[in-house]
Amino acid sequence: MFQKILIANRGEIALRVLRACKELGIQTVVVHSTADSDAMHVRLADESVCIGPPPSRESYLNIHQIVAACEITGADAVHPGYGFLSENAKFADILAAHNITFIGPSGDHIRIMGDKIEAKRTAKRLGIPVVPGSDGAITDDKEAKRVAAEIGYPVIIKASAGGGGRGMKVAHTEADLEVALQTAKSEAGAAFGDDAVYIEKYLEKPRHIEVQVFGDGAGRGVHFGERDCSLQRRHQKVWEEANSPALNTEERSRIGGICAKAIADLGYSGAGTIEFLYENGEFYFIEMNTRLQVEHPVTEAITGIDLVHEQIRVASGGGLSVRQEDIKFNGHAIECRINAEDPRTFTPSPGTITHFHTPGGLGIRVDSGVYSGYKIPPYYDSLIGKLIVHGRNRVECMMRLRRALDEFVVDGIKTTLPLFRDLVGNPDIANGDYDIHWLEKYLAKGE
Image (cartoon, rainbow, N blue to C red; front, side, top):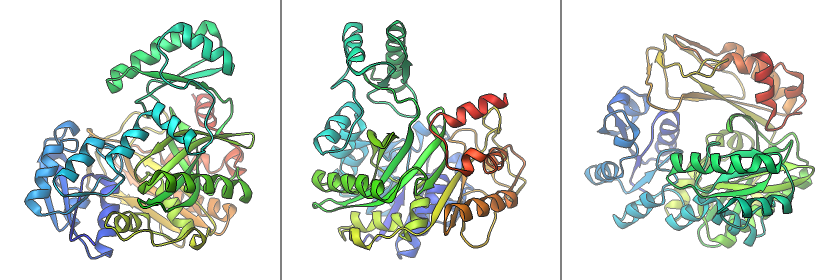
């Protein structure tokens, strides 16, 4: 087991990892920018190192400074959390070259899954169902029209190196295609420094289903069930559930088994999430995230397994602590992402939190690094906390969520709490009857 882990992140995920390390008896080091000197994870860590000014590129994305912090403090491993350097293959390689363990997969696996075209090829080779589309990057209008005609309109153009909805455009007819292709390429080049794009069939009313997987790097793989992340705004997840209201036990077992086998065959090490669009009983691979997900607590709630503990165990060479037959699913869980944003316009709302009170009681968990008097800096992601609610079934979970949202108080800044109070009372949400377009349509009606 590791002696000291450096946590290369901030906010609620840094605190989440820090807690896991403390439970395992591992010393902790956190890095932080000057803007985060009073953050909760900095206060609670055994050691902290300031690595630069507020801009991420000068602090949380500064590989040289983070490696230097490891060497100064004697950290023998780095947990990257999510975001920032968590899916940076170069970072994983550099740590390995300094004999520091990256708590995550190999740089090679990060590279494969970070390239959306190569990821799709790999998924297909491993037996994972994929969305019909181009085999590689689209180079010109003629090729785009040929592929679109073969798979049928509407189609979606995606950035190969993309994420977060950038470099994605839908074409409903051939007349739309040329503009959509050029716009997607331009956005991809600006956002990712790579304008390669590919084409896939655009599904009209899909769910977003993702499967939590783990590999031991030596040919064993397991899955921890699925999460439904269909409630999204601009391709950003807002509300996540486990298990999905749309799947039955047979479908859950089938797709989970496919993913676990694929991870084993790949020789993958650590946590990963294989994401799908799901429509009319069929799953279509869209991407794999080679890290811990923001929404991992709902999986922990229904399995009773600490996924960060599992990450650390696997990275230290201890292998997986469970076999597939050991993993049981209990009840239902929902996570709401509480952001420092206006609940109608979604404009960021940095500032000082004058009062912060979290809900409590059976089945309630709040992952947050903020407190009364904490000042939300304007430099980073607006997520300030996650409300996770667990119940014996979805009905009980929804009732508990409604109560928890009523108890949650954040004063001094605007947050998205009012949005969730509206959603929990909506009949479609209560019935689990929604797709990836539902939330944006709902929000548009309110404008």
